[in-house]
Length: 394
Image (cartoon, rainbow, N blue to C red; front, side, top):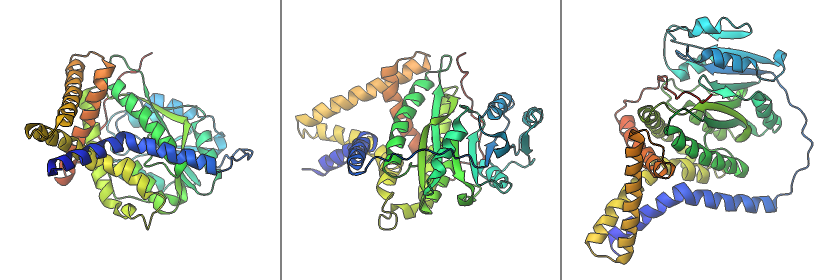
């Protein structure tokens, strides 16, 4: 077997394992776990501790009224729920709009340092044992906080992740890719949590034991990701509560989705550099396999494997290494042709689900390369840009 054959098969394995194989293996493991563990018949006792609901917002005047109204509609004992909006650096009417609503506290500093700095500053004001963090561009179901708190009846739980739902939008093809991607990620999140812990909570809706919150560096790009694993490193788990959800629309355009994916990818490389200890299975035996399989490979070897599988396949065909490589080459060619077709149709505003899926897959992996370059050049700022979102269908 030639070196190119080795490169091809290893690359193909890494891609398949990262996106499909890990999920299949994870499912098998949790099925075995279910058989070995006895079902618990404990009666659920209502758990309603004092909670701070914290939202970081920057120049959200177009949506902030809806967000505040939604926050006030949360069905949780009012005497146990404090609502805080931190709006550092906002220069529009965000603060004025929030001030119209009694019962909502606003923390504001004219200096804009980014989301992490704003949240760190706001957390210093939190006196309740639990805090729920939510993005300013999302809407929660009324029972969200109640459902999140129930998970904390287990003292081993340090954080609970809610579900992210992408709302149907008017004419946004991006919603197809983003929505399908999140459905798959939500399934993996459910299985990850059942085995041990969620591999990085989405910041749209998370609940934390206040005592476990760790002030992160202000240059942190993926605050939710880092907070999740910092809690894991303290010996606590991150659970998943799909019945508590945050709804948001998809990115308004492919350009906006590209910016978001590149930022996430750059943040992924930053986070991996700061979480190197998690690669040691002797130190973190319960989490290393899940962390590497679900997160590290997605941002490192899988995108590289995607490129190497294509290049090595072409070389093997030119070297006449065997018919199997002609077959795999045709398969790859069809896949990338479908991705290109998906891109062309998207640019023309045409929705074609089966072409958009391969396009979105390639699109995500290209964003990883660009994100890596931005990270290495230190060109990705932690100061968040307000993302343009599509208009939700009425």
